[in-house]
Amino acid sequence: MRNVLVSGGTRGVGLAIGKKLAADGFRVFALGRKESPELEAAIVAAPSGVMNFLPFDLAQVDLIPDLVRELKAEHGPLYGLVNNAALGTDGLLSNMHNSDIERLVRLNTISPIVLTKYAVRSMMTAGSGRIVNISSIIGFTGYSGLSVYGATKASMLGFTRSLAREVGRLGVTVNAVAPGFMDTEMTASMKDADRAKIAARSALKRLVDVDDVAGAVSYLMSDAAKNVTGTVMTVDAGNTA
Image (tube, rainbow, N blue to C red; front, side):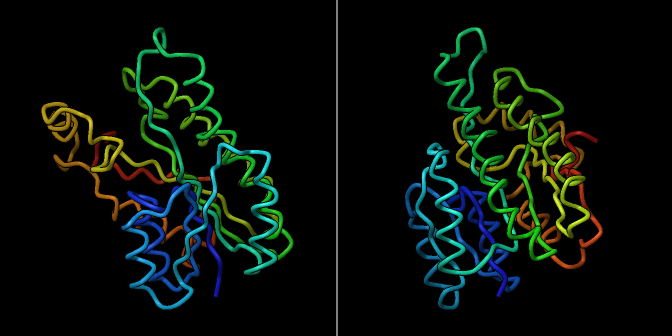
């Protein structure tokens, strides 16, 4: 059974991705600081050993090498990595505290790059593997009040394309999924009027569901996508059409 690590996999889109990949036949390790009731229920519902909780705080960048090494020693090498964990802190740049800026960049950019560094090594040795980075349409459209968040998500797009060229000759694919606004904790604080405006701008006149993103990741992680790399799959109900 192929091992896949999903960061931020305890709730929301990360949990949806993990559940979909588990249904596809992967052994999933959902990484997060705390196990959520939703993940606990998913673990119970799945066959034994298929869905697993991996407690870890990605802000502890220096401990990431040990995390990957211990995971490999106990369960074998990773076949797939989904970099999903991210902070969605909003606020005007001129008013944002420097510590908040640093926290966003650390968790949304530095942590996934370092995690990928250590996870991809076993994939390169094996001659196969899948990396999927969850970005956002904000990374290329922009959104008022999300300049720092947008910067971190744009950085993952450049990272995706360049890393795809680095590891492609060794059989590893690297792609990104850029979701539009979804019904998740990140958008729960938005006013209904703002959510309605976003939906109205989309070609399909609705927000994206987390299962839509999970389906895109499922495809990119599958054998059907063996020749898809260095690309960005946009799942936004036509918001950027």
